[in-house]
Image 1 (cartoon, helix red, strand yellow):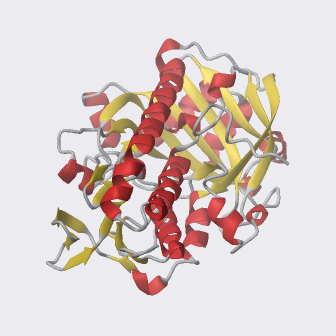
Image 2: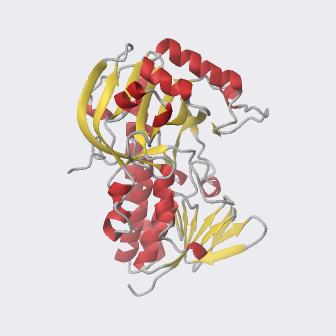
Image 3: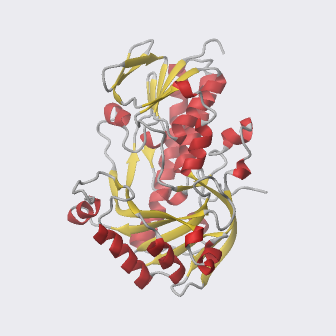
Length: 400
């Protein structure tokens, strides 16, 4: 490669770290700017792993992937009484968001991972792109990669006409140690991703590594996601008003949900869910809420600046591929830069069309899955179109 660009990555989450590692290993000088003042956490949330999510680990061998994942051989749907309605063999891998993030961060240069640096503006000329940081500092580079998430400041600057679209429902989420569940419940849920369909949405629960990466049954964590409809306006505003009286924009973190809303989840689960799933909800100390949005840009490349991951196209979680999409953007960007012999503008122009097409296709598929559960009520357990996947339904299954 004739020249290796200097790169600034805005956003230090899994997508941002993946692109930083890919480009660093290509030979670029890379700095990451993360607005959080402390290393990131995802409140114990679990993620479905796709081969692209763990590609860096598989190719560079900084760790054995088997040591950070829970492999689940079964996908199972329950009836109201807790009996099995449908099950099928799958080979999904789950991990905690924190586990993947922590291991990626461990292999990046810590003196180039800058915490407490919030990007507030962007500009560029023919030769350089510059990020302007809160407090007045600036940083110039040959390329700026914006991986700053669903609430992307970069997207608001570069695509001001794009607004997140409320899907009509939220995700109640929470985690609980398997040791806090009854042995019968922990055993019932320990080998599968378990679903329950109701007239008002769907619920799923799955084991993920414990807080210190424990993988042994009984020392892991069970994470649940429960999708429930809320009308936009008064109902949603009330849900997002936290215990301090502040109206949150897109989520209410653990410990900040008002007591009446937490109490409602427990009553609802007790009255309407299979007993094993009701136990998970009732024993979770601090459930929290995330609003489900659709966000899709019509451009990702802007000269020497690009949007990627949720900063460009944010999809509903139902295909289990949001993190994988960000990683796909990262690996494709490395390929494009190599093929363009380091020419940033040429690389981004070549990279953009495929990533836009992939992101929009995933958005449409995840929207179709979610609307089927929440509004059409036409899910059929075992329908292959419901399987997790990035490029197509089912491609998140690991062989072997």
